[in-house]
Amino acid sequence: MRAPVKNSLENSLIICLVFFLAASAFAEVKVFKNFPLIDGTGRPAAPHSAMILNHGIMEWVAPVSGLPNPPSAHVIDLRWICVISQ
Image 1 (cartoon, rainbow, N blue to C red):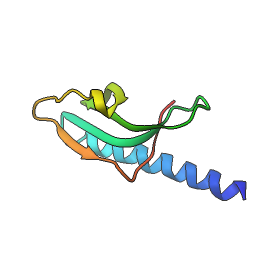
Image 2 (cartoon, rainbow, N blue to C red):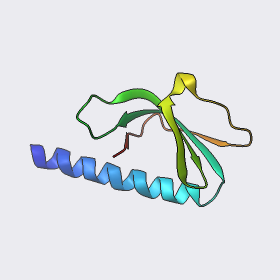
Image 3 (cartoon, one colour):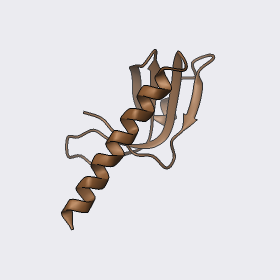
Image 4 (tube, one colour):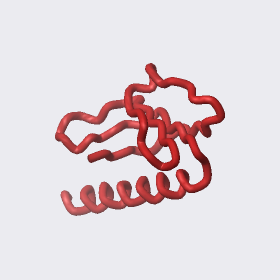
């Protein structure tokens, strides 16, 4: 039973990475919000997280409640996506 979960997790990570790389190529500032963040430390996922990417570089990660509103940013709701960070 462990193998399908691990494969699913690996596939999700690959999809997330491809999504972030592709998204950063098309706009300067992207805001991703409403996703559970898994930080790789073994702690539980942080629900309702947000992230700001500027030219593909992660500038800000925190709960969506503290999300600043960058002007002209493209906002993407990731409600059904899980983000894994290292």
